[in-house]
Image (tube, rainbow, N blue to C red; front, top):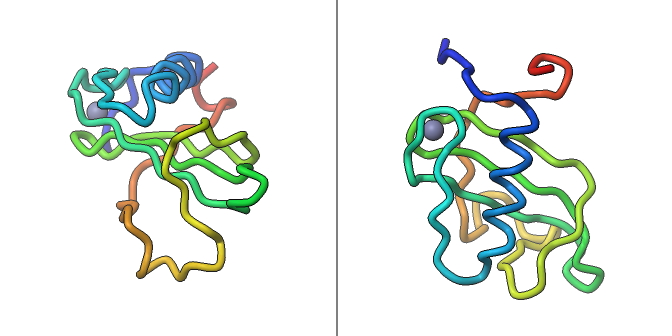
Length: 103
Ligand SMILES: [Zn+2]
């Protein structure tokens, strides 16, 4: 098991910073391992631009999942109607951090 060094708040702060930079290049560092390898995938109702977000680090495969969120303007998002295997962004099987484990 990967040691979890970052708090939930640290991950949310990184997520917010990452989202602000979208759709441009993002260079937020992973709060867990420090790598510049954070990835986000939004999926939901494209017409409403709401859905969920998977946010993880490709370096250490740790991240968070946000159940209901607004998809930032200009950010790429996947429709829930698109089968997972046909989506542009492949989400790895990463270790999810939850608020109650971190605080
Ligand atoms: Zn990492």
